[in-house]
Length: 357
Image (cartoon, rainbow, N blue to C red; front, side, top):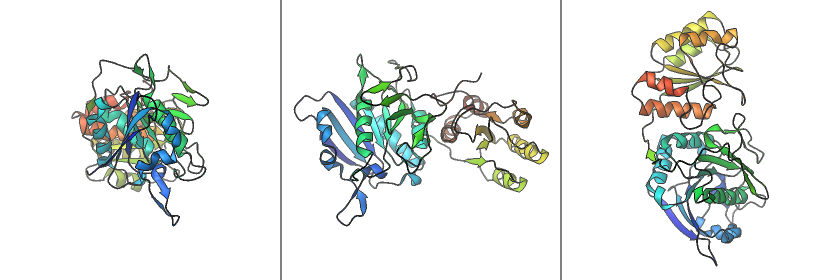
């Protein structure tokens, strides 16, 4: 891709103490109003004019922009490859990374980066905005400034947050634990099943016990194989056998994320169980996740989920749908043996779920 590269030195008077690579993919944060009032991509060469407080940070910033900013609704596997590859290729040159991304699919991208960038020991901070950076009440400036501060934060010479995360509206969340829950308020994300990594007030209060430990000996590995022959099926009262059978008959289908009720419950009718059982016997891997934002799947807790466990449906524990579907794409692309895929789906590989009890 023909990336646009801009280098900015925010150290007006003092020496540079850190370096950050910003990857601009698109999204509201990087938009500005032109003279006609229309939204157009922001020129990051003018970032100091829009965010003058950057001059107090004393960091060297490089901005790599996608050739054409994309709406996050158009994110696909190629863009994930691009994001991960840029970080991998520039890993040794920067203290941290900030990815500016549209809010709609940010949790999917953050989850996928946590899998593709194995052995990560530097901050990768996703952020965005609900209002463009040129808007009077925009949340873009604060989100960007704090994301940069987190990306360069160190303690005893080591990065404070050596993992993929999302910063939005004062809260730093583990990337593969976050969900978008608001489209009109600034607090767009939540992480019901895992504590916040930090909260930004007068100071940034880090929750060190929740942050993945820094592992100095780990070497970054870039996994660039994914398989998107997966679907998400959300259960609803009135779903029919024809709908399920049609989904399971999709040519090339390898994996299904099944969104069930509550703690993993589903209809107990015979036709429902038989449809899933036929799919499992065909080799389709089915992962059971809850439709609830909080809580976890406990297959067998109620009668309505006992059959799922018996026929080989896997329990997704407290994983989010976003982390589940990207994890399935990742494992299907990088593991050959179905038994190994099934084993890793129910175990945490990047902090995306709690270990089984």
